[in-house]
Image (cartoon, rainbow, N blue to C red; front, side):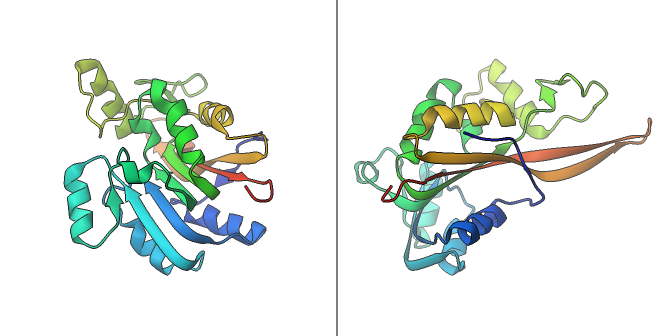
Length: 227
C-alpha cells in the first residue's frame, strides 16, 4: 500500500528511476515503452547507466503513422494489439503520459496488462489534476484562476471528440493510487505515487502565489524473490 504522496522536484521521471535503482540495486536489460509516441525513449535506454546487458527496447504505439516513422528509424515499434506483443515482458515497463488518454472503464485492464508484463519496475506519468474540478478550482483552491491545457482538451470529449490523442480522464494522487492498488498483480507488489514538476504561479492582482505540482509520477515493483 502507499503511505502518502511524496514530492519530486523533477520535471521528468528518470530521477526517480535512478533513485529506485540505487536503493534496490536493480538494473534493466529490457524496456517496454507503452504509448511511446515520438519521444524516442529508445535513445535514452540505449545510453543510460541504469540499463545493462542487451538493452532490448520495444515501443508500443497505436498510431500507424508514428509506428511507420519509428520503424524507418530502426526502432522496434509494434501495435499493442499485435500477436507478437501478447507474451512480451520487460524489466522496465513505462507508460509516460498515456493513462489519461484511456477511457476510465478500460483503465483497470490497461494497468493489469502492463503491470503483468513488468519484471522489475513499472513507471507511469500523468498530469496532476487535484487542483481543478473540470473548469472550476477544486475545494480549497477557489481563487486559483489558471486552467491547464489538458483540462481544456478533456472538455472536448463532450462535443464528440474521441480521438486517441484526447485526454479522456483526469487523475489526482488519491485516484491514481486507488487505480494502481486495484491492479497490482499480487500482494508482493509495492508502489508509490509522487507529485512532481513544481510550478509557482503568482496572481499579480491579489497578489497571491500558488505552488502546484503539475505531474503525477508512479513506480510499482514486485518485492517477492523471483517475481
